[in-house]
Image (tube, rainbow, N blue to C red):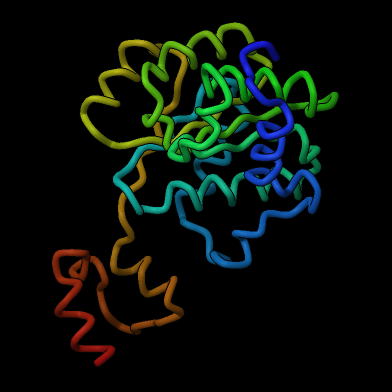
Length: 212
């Protein structure tokens, strides 16, 4: 705990980010009840101890997928306190520690987690400098813990993953919603139409035709 400058504030912020420790449910599931098709595939790989890397452009749904994964784990019987989530896009906790990745893990593992299988979810991890070096150490020293991260689909991040996490990760690339997925999320249905021709490049035309 020496690297954490104020334990009470640090713990309080972790508790805010992980309210499911107390409620045993993920609030975002109410707001986003429809699950992405990609969720099932990613969920299958939670059984493997390699790092799951969820990559994609901003606002494509990576964070919502992570929250759905956490909800599925809790429903499956994983103890909520054995799941750590934090969005590294939030700079607040950086004020109170030397290294947010290591310090959040260290505090959680020593003060919050219990016996049983454990999971770590670091969202938007590319906001931390040299995140790959800390994640490599974390993985190599704690292979019994499943680590899931999300981050940018930039070439720079892909190069960092390939160089520093080689042999340690599984990549899941998330694309923006296709037009078919968009309709599903909006509760709309178009019958007798081949939706393959109506992907994002035709989105505006389709919207004007069916919804205006």
